[in-house]
Image (cartoon, rainbow, N blue to C red):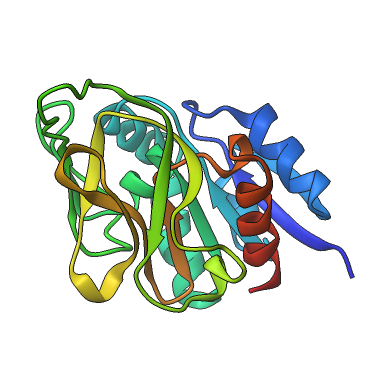
Length: 204
């Protein structure tokens, strides 16, 4: 059976890449800016590239923030946040002067503190280290390489941390709260490992 996925378009999204990856992994993909479409979606993907404060402003301005809260409360279903999409799931983000997030995963999004020899933004391949068993990381080995592009990262409670990466002293590479989960890296750009994660999400 083909899995239906709605990509939530808040205006700061690389829709083509994530859409193609989901389709290649077997999903039937729709993209929408209409909050009414969230209620009937089987699975949700919240992508994003850019600024936390602007992303939240767009979600509120389009009525998508309220629709996500209402839709998930009425009908819990898998949601995957990608890069900025993961950050927007948090309770608060400091980028743009400090802004409340969606509050779907506990934690705050803060600027990375690079060590000597490290740069921001953090761009490129880095190892990811799963912290506990989770369907999203089934078949993905500890130390697998994935692709990152970001300067901020989620700080969340240990029980919500799915995976870590070592850059800038270590940061949350993936997190969850029930069926809501997210990854700081780009699975659509992470070749075999990323596509394994996408297939895992479709199977959740």
